[in-house]
Image: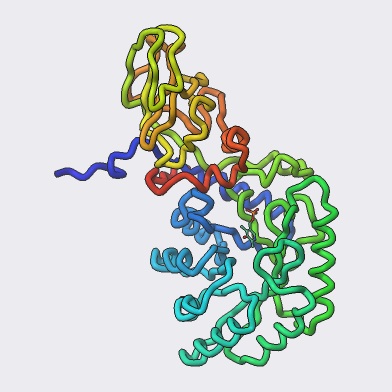
Length: 377
Ligand SMILES: *Cc1c(COP(=O)(O)O)cnc(C)c1O
């Protein structure tokens, strides 16, 4: 049996990697000489971690932020010889892998310091770590006043290399920056009150901070969403954000076309009843691909250079689109754009996010592994 390209999937994610690099250049302009550690967690925000990371590595980015050690291992085993900062808190059971794969974990407990040091000693290795300080996010991280004691503890274990001290913003993407400035102050005060030496890398800025909080740059920045050409929010003040270009397009193809009479119910629950004789296209994308069922009857796809309304419940593998306006100008096999451009029109991840009451981050991250990621540029 001949093997089909991309197991026969008609719904694909198309990556404009040239835009990824342009977005990084734009971010680099904002931060000057500081290095950037791109965040490629969650399959590079749904874009495809392997393709994104290898491309960035070839462009000179050698350190990446991931969520957990498993994400790092997958990339290392794909042949990427990069350094990985593991952002989420880890458990004892992750320690052998962290040390063996030379990942750089974020630490926020004394037990972790000892257990990592013990394992590194056993293996005759050193492991680089980053202490995470909670300056207002309220997630993982030590209380700022405990930084001196944590630094001292790290320093007491020669198998540990205290490489960084970091923090994370809770609302850098909001118009009111009062709380963010307070977080910067808390971070600064914690570091100033601690003997950590000049060699320790201080890092705090996410994408929103890179655009709107120049005082948050410290030594290195950790951009995520913006490298993919998406805005951290609609409230970013810095006009440079307008120059971001979305890296990802998500497209499918029409697999079926059918004329139906007025009064025909479509899909589960018959939530859409045609009001006129209609031409209905079926496309092979559904919630199994990350196209949320909550968008049913409330979203458009681009077909034949027009916005065409999705009709009836979105099912697991398929959904329907009303293409009556395209009668005579649409065929089975035609392209249908879920996110992206066609004929001068665009549907953005932001548009879907707004309809779902969520953020663009969740829209792109939700695109499932089922859609092959294809590099177009
Ligand atoms: C995800 C993440 C980032 C990147 O955030 P963006 O808003 O996507 O730029 C930076 N730092 C930490 C700790 C993160 O978890």
